[in-house]
Length: 620
Image (cartoon, rainbow, N blue to C red; front, side, top):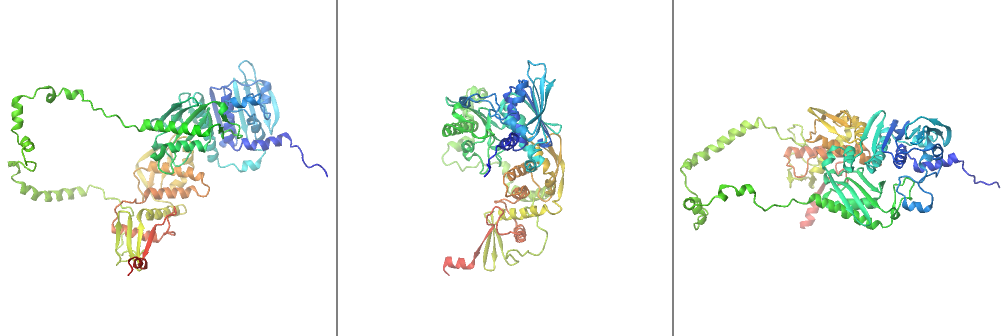
């Protein structure tokens, strides 16, 4: 029998290994940016076209490489960071495995130009499918420029699994932000399809956060600073109002390396305790600095998963630091019981209380009512009130006249349901003209049925009605739009703006007419005519959060999430007073729903109490 085990060629082995490191364009961005940071660059530029599928280039002004190093850096496990096994316990650089460039060269067409400061000429190398096609001297600035073209050109199956440009660009943006937050002292820029998305000048961490997250965060950040013998914790956390339904804006760094650690994330969230609604997650950008020997960063090819020597101790330190910072933010201002200096200068304080003034006060009826026995009920008569009967007789007439004159100027209260005018009482779920319908505790609607009665939750019922209405709007002509007299400008973060841009047609179907208005800004020209809202910007932001949440939840589409969000936003709330026709209209519309017994969240909308059940209770 012939031997069946063969050694793979190096270029095939590199392609297989590249699958662990380079999973999508964003993975290559992370590796190339971290290499630029390790090179000591003070300026790093990222340029992408077609969401990195066509071109992905990183340019830095670091120390560059010699001709031999430029050729060897593409070999697998070629690294300048470690020479022996003991070096792994002192690693502080971003990269050290020597796999990034080898993986990049295995799945793309690479062109690199690099030069050291002491060299007159640099080196230019072209590589395709792990094979060097060309290497020659070139004129170039100090530093390194690496350009990847046609990612996965030689692995078509991998390329077919890439998502849309919007999704891939979001992953690239996420990786860019993580590296940029780790090193606020370095200038970063990000250009996509010829348009500059980020221009981040070097500065403090707070300045970098505001540049990335938006100017609104400048007043919503709480500083964290805790220094111990074991570790140092610095950074910023968001005030409770910055909490969102998704975990996207959460950044944890260990020795300036972005890491994912659910255990430590739990420590941060638990420190907020009752400050956040259930299902919401706070913003944070925290930096843990500790001895590299107490951390194992060599547990995953992407180096985003690490292990701590004493994870419980780190957990306790983080939770304590967050609670301390939140306590400082929430502390009530001290009450100053000292007298104001201005009060001390008033005549009543500074001047003496003379004898004639004392006699005048004692002779007043007000003084006598306080010091006299049984005088608390005493009312002093006054000639000014001699016509008091006429005053009360004329007051109702005057009040009615004023009210009638004001009613024509005051807006009518908005009905939550806007029932169609109809003289006939609608028949729904057993409600008829002879049945009575009542609202209990401004929350429940109770009405009779032939064999019992029904108790309906008004908020859940209206939400279900609106949910099915919005869901049907996706397939119909769309919702009617009320044009805004004064359009509203909505400013978004650079990460959310492309996402909103991609769902503009869907929002128009729901009645929200938005148009691009400069960089990362949109103009709200119209909103749903049937469902006015006092804060349409908040509705748009809620929709964005639901779209991002749906992207991480495979079993639900973002259109369904939008319909649920709008239903919750516009439905009548528990505690709202409803008129009889509004209650009847709600029951009628609920009876026409495809699913009128169960809420879209799985809760019962109403319960039926049968006469037999009541008879059993009272034993009659």
